Length: 143
Image (cartoon, rainbow, N blue to C red; front, side, top):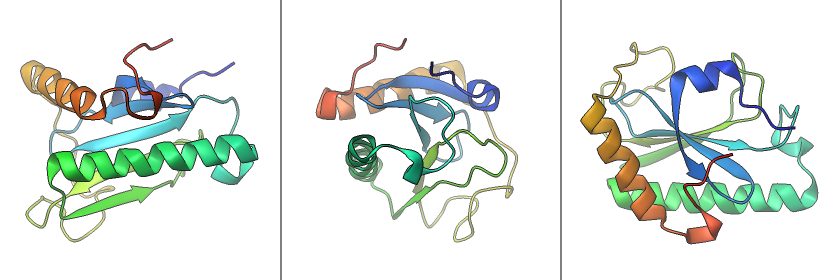
C-alpha cells in the first residue's frame, strides 16, 4: 500500500494525481518546485519500477516538465532524484530563472524555504491544475 513519506507530507502540498504518480508542490515560494512520487510501495530508485511503470513514470515526468516550463516560462528546468534525505522514490521538477535567489547553483541547502501565503498557495495550485487539465490522465482526486 502506498504511503507518502512524512517529510514529503510535511514539506509539500498535494496538487493531484497522474495515473502512476502523486504530484506535490514544495511549500517554498522562491521557486515553482514540484515533486513527482510514484504511488508504489517501498521504492527508492527509478530502475526499481516495473517496465510498464517506468515508461508511465517517464511519460508523466516529461509532460510535467514541459507544462511547467511553458506555464512558468522557465529559463531552465531542473529535474532530479536525490533521495539522500527522503528515501522514498520522488523526483523534483524545479522551474529555474536566471534571477532566482540560488541561480546558477542548485537550490538544495542554498536558502531556507519561504512558505507561500494562503492566497499565493491557492493561486499556484489553481494555475498548475489548469495548465495540466486532464493531460495524461491528471486529476485533482487524491486518495
